[in-house]
Amino acid sequence: MKSSTSFLATIVLAVGVAGAQTAPIAIRVDVDIASPGPVIDRHVYGQFSEHLGTGIYGGIWVGPHSSIPNINGYRRDVVEALRRIHVPVLRWPGGCFADLYDWRDGIGPPASRPVRINVHWGGVTENNAFGTHEFLNFAELIGTDAYVSGNVGSMNPYDMAQWLEYMTSDSASSLANERRRNGRDKPWQIAYFGIGNETWGCGGNMRAEYAADVNRRYSTFVNAPADMHMIKVASGPTGSRPDVYDFATAMMRDGGRLQAMSLHYYTAPMLTGSDGTRVRAPATGFDAEQWAMTLSLALHMDELVTRTSAVMDQFDPDRKVILAVDEWGSWYAQEPGTHPGFLYQQNTLRDAEVAALTLDIFHRHSDRVKLANIAQTINVLQAMILTDQQRMVLTPTYHVFGMYVPFQGATPYPARVTGPDYVLKGYTLPSVDVSAARGTDGKLWLALVNLNPDTPAHVTTNLDGTAHGLVLTGPAMDSHNTFDAPDAVHPVAFAGTNQGGRVVIDLPARAVAVVAVD
Ligand code: AHR
Image 1 (cartoon, rainbow, N blue to C red):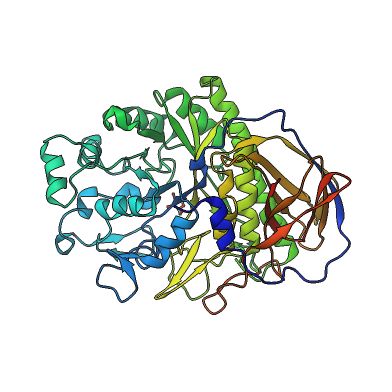
Image 2 (image 1 turned 90 degrees about the vertical axis):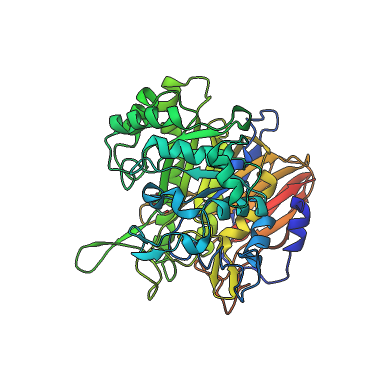
């Protein structure tokens, strides 16, 4: 795989950044390199791919006989793009889809696999061409750890245990031999296994106490060989319901010996329609108020993580149990004219900021958040990649994940930001958000987000040296890439200056920058 620096070098392209802007606001950033925090687990840069819309079929899998260039059925362009951003872990097969999924549907000769109806997502038929082998081989192909979500909603523990044995046993058991007959000799490594998904909702509509009992029961039987060190993820709360902390409490108290608990939270701005109904806000064509509302909702992740972690502290004061934010991202009205239930949305500079702000929050909670999965990788919700038959575009969110590669496994430092807030129509946001960390390459990395869509920021730091890296911005709040203009938004070379012995960074409005301080 490419190093982070070579990745950065390959995406430095020459386009102009934002045009004329108003006078900059003054921001002060103080990085405390004497107070390193716990390492940022690279698995917080994880992705999620569900059998939903064209997330799998068309997005990842086109089949080996497709005219779309592919590697054993996987889109070559997608494989190469995902390798470049060093995806550390991929979650599959759902989501809601997981709790109606029978793993036996997705093994054996493809022509013999049953056709089911994907009741959660558009009611379309699912031919199971992409199953266990196809997912786990894909994970190996892109160099990512596998996170498999189990079905506790409609399947019994015996079947789930059998799936684990099928995937992970190196014995001469009938299941291991069946796997061999299906083309895979050695077991796969499974890094994480989800004990259900959203048990409070599409995973079974369970009460918290019942969900905790279900976790105890299923996790008793779900085991991989000990040397695989597979982590079981209990299905935890959602930040979109008022019982978020009660649910977390019940799961931590009654769920058995947990290794990890999930938290889901979507940045989902809503508008009031002319008839008074609440509708999802659009992904493009929004105004500054919707920009501020969306970023404000994204920043709510910090409170959710802080308070959920505090609940976990009551039962796990040594912070051994991982908080796994295994679904997060923006959720807008789906694009007009697209298939109902496919959750296909455009992805703009605003989403780049949602991603950067959320990753910065995970950096600040590196003691507890050690796994996270943005929803979803391709063609669904806040996607990295959009595809249309032969064509592919990389979204602004993809570019943030690429720019942030140096933060994978880095050691974070506290960074205090001082300066005026960005205030608009009842929303008060920090003008600039900063994350600082020492990368595994030994360099000091700074990520800076200018939340103000109109005004640049003049950022003075306490750091000595020079700063070089990349910036992502565009002429409008909803700048985005399309199949006809796939490179409208992409990172360009960017540098700070040294003024009076201190690094100074002039950050454009509505921008994300990542720089190394030398
Ligand atoms: O990511 C889309 C859906 O959102 C998932 O299937 C579900 O877990 C969540 O509600």
